[in-house]
Image (cartoon, rainbow, N blue to C red; front, side):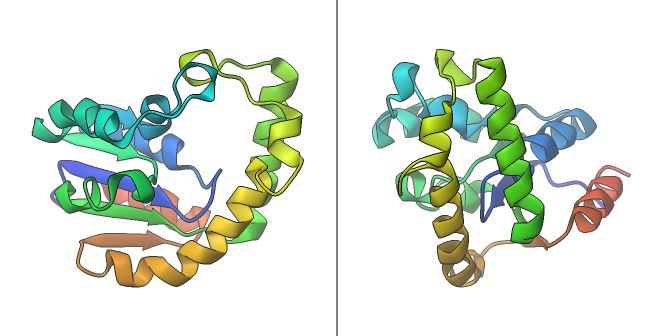
Length: 175
């Protein structure tokens, strides 16, 4: 397989392994990795404007190779997927990603782990209310399951539905 040069890694839910896969692809292919969360979440969780986000991505898009992970379709529309040689859609079952999300969030909160731009996750924001990270992930998963097949139909997409498929894909890229 001739490896793609520009890869967008998306997922229907949080904690499917977008960043982990993107980092592995970056190392394997020698392409720079861009984590959209780091560009979107400014200090104090202040969200970057759509225009500023697109401006930050302009030099990335101009590069011959990149691996971008993150969704943000509401902010970016097709800007990332339309420029990608390949869209990798991590469509893992809820029984895989939900325990990962809970473990990751509990760990980050307990360790007071610094994320992007000095931000930290809190247990309250992760688990309390309809806007919590867990509620957001559950509702987005359902919505994306319904919408994404039509949205992604015009693009070159590799839909991976299990951790085994993710591992097999990574093994074949760059081999």
